Amino acid sequence: VRGREVLFLSDQMGIKLNRGTDGIVRVISVSEIQPGSSILRKGKVEAGDLVREVCGVDLRRPITATMWGDTVALIKMTPRPVSFIVAQEITSTSFSSPRAPQASSPRPTAAEI
Image (cartoon, rainbow, N blue to C red; front, side, top):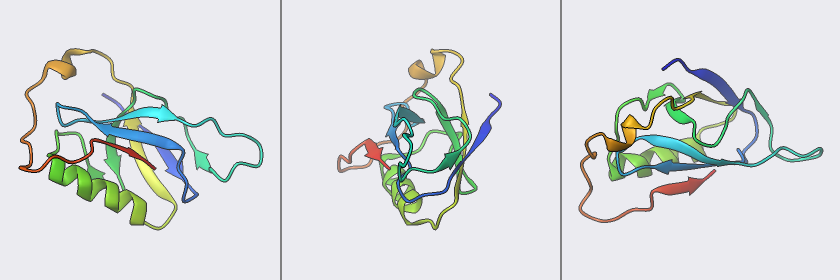
């Protein structure tokens, strides 16, 4: 799947990410940028996009719940601009892929950033 770059320039990114039960990170919602908004980004990101890379960290393979927590912290703490590589999910076959290993304690799987 070929990706496209999205550059987030502001602290508020206006997206909500989710780590699915398959361990794949997806964009589940995107805030529309209104005139005068504090959200600044370059590039196109849509709900349903797969997150392939963040800040140079490869997210193409399934990640564990523990890795998810670390990924969210990295995104929130990284100085702006932050680069994401996202791609449209072509098929639904990835939803039936094997589940990623789970951590012993449950963690949230969605993060608003």
